[in-house]
Image 1 (tube, rainbow, N blue to C red):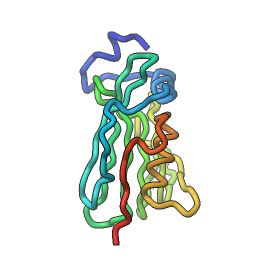
Image 2 (cartoon, rainbow, N blue to C red; image 1 turned 180 degrees about the vertical axis):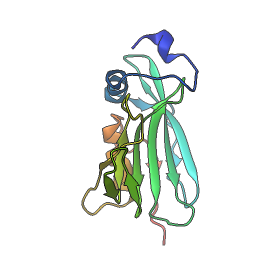
Image 3 (cartoon, rainbow, N blue to C red; image 1 turned 120 degrees about the vertical axis):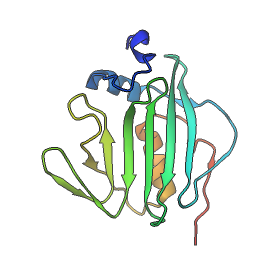
Length: 156
């Protein structure tokens, strides 16, 4: 990807699906080695990851629902222009895609140039808690650390 384009801090910045997939596919690792705590209900955690080989930085966020303790959103986005590339929504609700198809429950948004992040695909794994979904999201976003140094405690 053209580095000048990537450094454009314009909220109207668009990228192609191919450019977005290249960014998602880059192998990434945490910038800091500090231990992080998985967010409690209503809280949010953000940290930076870095693709060393390409010299590209990204932001990962984990946001917990305020009311439903099982609701959580995991997102990976570009650092310089804040474009969401990949988002996993863990929810008991539903999502309607731009073509009218309805997805019930958990779903994954992958950036594409036509609909940006409006469309999603179903995403479920067996016997998953929020931490297992977090680890699966890290795999999809190609973060190479097993748990990114995040401590997770089950809430009662």
